[in-house]
Length: 104
Image (cartoon, rainbow, N blue to C red):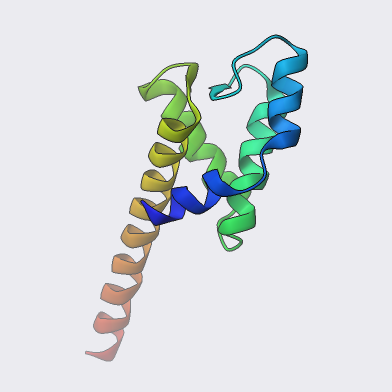
């Protein structure tokens, strides 16, 4: 998935360094740490600036409930972006149908 690839290829050194200082695995996301959730939100916003923090947080919550607390960064981002894309596609379908009905 190209959208996830761009996020993964971005600079994660600050995140990785914080994880290493706490003796944690750098390639896993731990949703129990607020700073990790905030970091993920900011990283996604960098590449998806039109996506609201609330929408990203909803996707993170769904990821946490579906997959687990501590999951691989790549898997986490793939799932979150997939949820955001589905929500955006659903919203666009709703908008298009409303526009069609107004025209009729």
